[in-house]
Image (tube, rainbow, N blue to C red; front, side, top):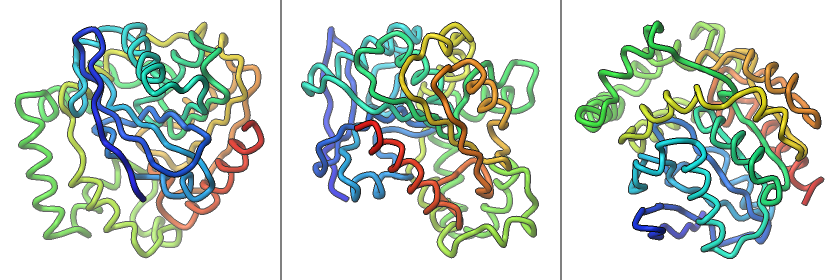
Length: 287
């Protein structure tokens, strides 16, 4: 899969982005937490089916300026300016995991730029709070001064002991035990997790994400007027299915695709082809 990686400077702020070179129908991806414009999950199927995939590194991730993440309003203004720079009028918006609030805000406030919205394993309301253990751990391990060391250590151990790290990280992705997961896994899943850990970084972005999940409201969801597909695994251990159900209740023109994927990473496992097919069918229907 060929991609162009570039940056654009708008009002003194940098936005890093990638764009695939094949396909004419634009899909604008708001990547998940600890990711950036180098994300890969789910892209190949889109490109093979005639879509062009544009992914900005969201605020604080990669080389994108952290200051644009002062609010969802400010961040989305800059993502719209990126589309203006690329001379793209309207997109299919795809929001993943912690990128959910960004996609929800963008779709609700800039409806003239959005054909459809797809939420994949997405956060749709307040997520981790200061009372949660995961929140407290994130404030330590993924703060900007330490996150590079954290990911270097994880990837180093993961490259040597991929199955061990997979089992250690399992509870953060799935409600299933490893024994229960085996029948749902695909042959390359463990190696895909290894490759994911090698490309992940948090920058300032993940701590910005934790703040921005508090900004999106039910009014933002209710303001979404475009067709919306909500894809979520019933076994998701990172973002509970409650987020999908909540979004469906608020968004008028929405449908939920309940998945039997082994967990949060719905692009892996034996269910992944089904995920790709349902997404492509939905996007094609409204292209």
